[in-house]
Every structure is written in C-alpha cells, then in structure tokens.
Length: 389
Ligand SMILES: NC(=O)c1ccc[n+]([C@@H]2O[C@H](COP(=O)([O-])OP(=O)(O)OC[C@H]3O[C@@H](n4cnc5c(N)ncnc54)[C@H](OP(=O)(O)O)[C@@H]3O)[C@@H](O)[C@H]2O)c1
Image (tube, rainbow, N blue to C red):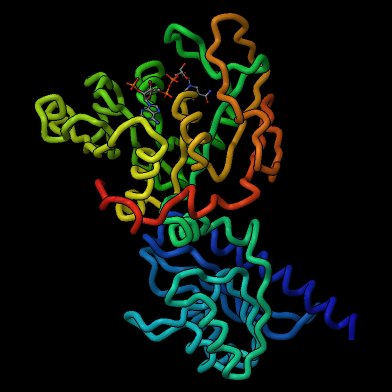
C-alpha cells in the first residue's frame, strides 16, 4: 500500500513539473489572469500516457483546464488532471472549470496551489470532492507558483510581486561616484536580466539611475523585443532630462514618471508631449511608495522589477516591499569612489537563498522572502486612497 502511494506521489511530482513547465509558456500574456498549466494523464508509472495539455490562453481565456479537456476529448474520462492552480469555481463568461472537470469524468485531480481569489478559495476543490473526485492538494509553494506569483501577490496584498535586482562589484559597490557609467555584470548575466525584464509587467528605477546611466530598460533578446515591459521612473522633482532615452523612446515603449509635481502643471507638459505619463507620488515616505505600488495592479502591473539604484532599492527594502532579491556578484573592482550597495542586499534578513547560478564570471543568487509581508506592512487597496495610475 505504502509502495503504491509512493509511486502515485512520484507520478504527481513528475506530472506537476510538466504542467508547471507548460504554464511558463504564457507568463506575462494572460492579462490579470494567472498563467496556469493543466495536464490530463491516463494510467500510471511506466504506462502513463498524457492525453491532454493546456495552458491559459493569451488574454486569460479559455482557462488551462478547458484547453486540456478539449485536447483530450473522450480520453479525459477516467484520467488524472494536474493543474498548477485550483480550478475556478465561479461563473464568468463560461461555467466553472471545476464543473467542466466533473462533467468530463476526470477521476482524480492534483492541485499545485490553492487559489486565494475570494470567488474560488477552496470552492473549486469542494466542487470536485462533492462529485466524488479524489483531490490531492500540493503545498502550493516554490516553483509551481512562480509563474503566477504576481497574481497571488495582487490577491493577497493588493500590490505587484517585487523583484529587486542589483549588480555588485567584488568590493561591494554598485556604481561609480560622479556619474561615470560602469558595467558591473557580464554579458551572460545581462542576458538573464533581459529575460527577467521580458517576464515582468514593469521595470522601475530612481531618477538618479536614469540620469547617471541613461538606460533604455528594454528587453533586447532576439525575438523578445516585443516583450519590453513598461518603464517607471521615480522622479519626485521632475529632473529627468528631456533628452534621456527613457523620454525620447516613450512612444514606442511606455514610460511612466512618478512625481510629486502637478501632472497637469507646466513642468509636466514637455514630458507628456514626448509621450510619457505622469503618476502622482505623494512624497518620500514608505507609505507613499506603498500607495504607488498599490495603484499598480489596476494598471495591469502584477510583477515589478526594481533595477535600482541604491537609494530606491534601500527605500523598497526599508518599506518591506521586496519579495525576491537578485544579486549579481561580479569580479569587477571599482576600488575608490564607488557607490555602496544598499544595506540588506548582500546579506538580507528574512530572506532565504532560493537559487544560485554561475553566469560567465558572475555569481547569480536569488533570495526569497521567508515570511510573506504582513498585511499590516502592506495594506490592501481598501485601506489606501484611490488609484492614481
Ligand atoms: N549595480 C546596479 O545594479 C545598479 C543599478 C542601478 C543603478 N546603479 C548605480 O547607482 C547610481 C545611482 O544611484 P542613486 O541612488 O542616485 O539612484 P536611484 O536610487 O536610482 O535614484 C535616487 C533618486 O530617486 C528618487 N527616489 C529614490 N527613492 C525614492 C523614494 N522612495 N521616494 C521618492 N523618491 C525617491 C530621489 O530623487 P530626488 O533626489 O530627485 O528626490 C533619489 O535621489 C549610479 O551610479 C548607477 O550606475 C547601479
């Protein structure tokens, strides 16, 4: 008995990993919906056969389960369904996916993670069990949820999932004082950064970085240039030069400027004429940063990559608004006149090392928050003034 359970659990891990890989295909392409993977499998062990595959379609509909059921046709009956997120339980333009799985005669369902959407929140599993279907819920952590961590973060805390990325020299600096631009990470690590950009809804920098480096902040990987996210500059005093690349390219890749200045005032006009949009930033407090973030999901931003610089990074860390830290340690030495890495980036408290890679000469490490941010430190949208995006 123990043996057959072990074998079944080994199958579950194997096929959930396949479903998860499927879900990666549409990350960033499913609007406010999560990119979910679904797999229908007949049999077990060495004779197991995949009869249906599905991933949430572009724009968010149809859901993965429906795609997989259509793929399997009559073969769905008696199969085991592997879905990375709990099947939905609410009526939208179509009936709930949980009902579709019941109607198709699926005999067992393995769920990667619960759906905290109040319209689902366990009801998808209830529908399946009420119909006599065996359901196994996995822990819902780690790699399975990563393709839709922005969706989960929006539902839990009303803000995007935030990844902070910093490249740090061997001697602990992130740049050179005096505005001289210096490349810290190497070519291979930079390509990984561009991949992170392609999978993010938005990239944010402080105006210090925009002035010092004049970055484009686009994804320039072959075939993925169309996946450049929107760019956000935190620029309270509107000191971003009008000839900065972020301004001059704003008509091809959107640029948003978060500023305390009047968005309809004379100072803002040239930026708006260049195609930039202005966001209202109330001030320099941690709550002001939180308000800015909580306004983002309504503008379609569920995943945000903060690319520095050190002042903005420190503000995010201090406000406990960072969910993942990506640190690239390079062999480059800056020696004197360096800009120091912000406290908490190199040895972050409350974060655990989740991934470590070698990319060329660079050491790439990813740190994930151990405890999710407390609701107190991340108030819901209801507790904050209306969206200013
Ligand atoms: N190695 C890396 O990964 C990396 C990444 C990015 C940048 N850098 C380097 O960092 C250096 C620039 O450093 P930096 O600290 O000046 O850049 P920064 O953090 O990009 O910009 C700082 C400015 O942004 C505004 N700002 C930041 N946080 C804010 C907040 N919470 N609320 C309101 N405004 C906020 C302020 O503008 P005002 O002063 O106008 O109010 C502040 O002075 C450059 O040398 C650059 O190359 C390194």
